[in-house]
Image 1: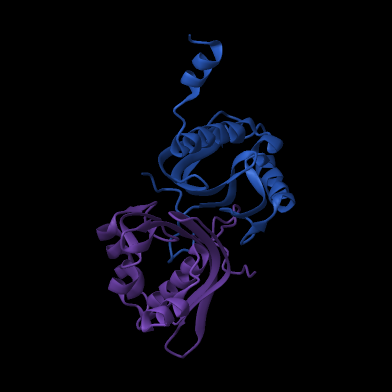
Image 2 (image 1 turned 180 degrees about the vertical axis):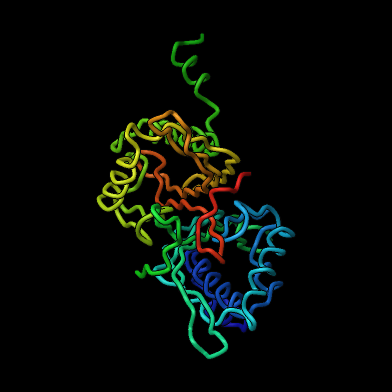
Amino acid sequence: MMTAMDTVSTANAPSTPEAEIRDLLDSYGRAVLSGDVDAILSYYTDDIVAYDAIGDLRFHGLPAYRQHWEMCLSFMKEGPTIYEIHEAGISASERLAFVHYLVRCGDCDQEGRERSGWMRGTACLRREEAGWRIAHEHFSVPFDPSSEKVRFDLTP
Amino acid sequence: MMTAMDTVSTANAPSTPEAEIRDLLDSYGRAVLSGDVDAILSYYTDDIVAYDAIGDLRFHGLPAYRQHWEMCLSFMKEGPTIYEIHEAGISASERLAFVHYLVRCGDCDQEGRERSGWMRGTACLRREEAGWRIAHEHFSVPFDPSSEKVRFDLTP
């Protein structure tokens, strides 16, 4: 006899670690677009080590990364309006996973003009009791060694 | 009875994935210091996806990354002379691993003056038949959003 529980488990399965990470990346992107710092921080481990594109060399632990995220979000009056993930490459086992991707991100100025650029993102994840969490994150933009300026002109 | 083989296996064991990754990172650093592009490339998977601090948004596959490494090494007359790995944080399972670290790298000019700066490095590894290989690598320097210049003034 098929029960309601069977239906639910059929609907949710088959869940592979790769599919779980893909879902997480999608929902993480929506959290960033929401501009809700609590929603964003819920994706990280307590001992997150983050290398962001701006700011310090590294951020260690949720309180330090919260402060940085709040500063980043304050740059954008109503949060980012563009956060498009492209070329995501996922490797996952039962306990650890990593994903690398390009991300087009930005917002619109007061005249509605889009200001955006391409960055690279890496997320390294651990499966904790509560589920997958990002234990290490790395965002960056390449720079030109002669001018020492970042290259917002690069596109995939 | 203790045999020579016992002695060898006692000397080499216990090898945990974490210890293997730590050894690999040390020997990878020595390969970079050697300036030997073949030695450096031997650490990567054929399908490496690399996000470097300079150059393109991403490099996909060994031939593209070789060309980039050759260009980078050509900047330095006799290869880098400084490549110090600090604050390495390793997570490893049987099949996948990742490590993040700060790296002070540079060389000396013709007057022997040191030119160096701090970068952030992330390496994501897969265990292949031949052993651990770096499947994804990400190097960067943070930038100042107002000047769009990278911040070589930052220290840990």
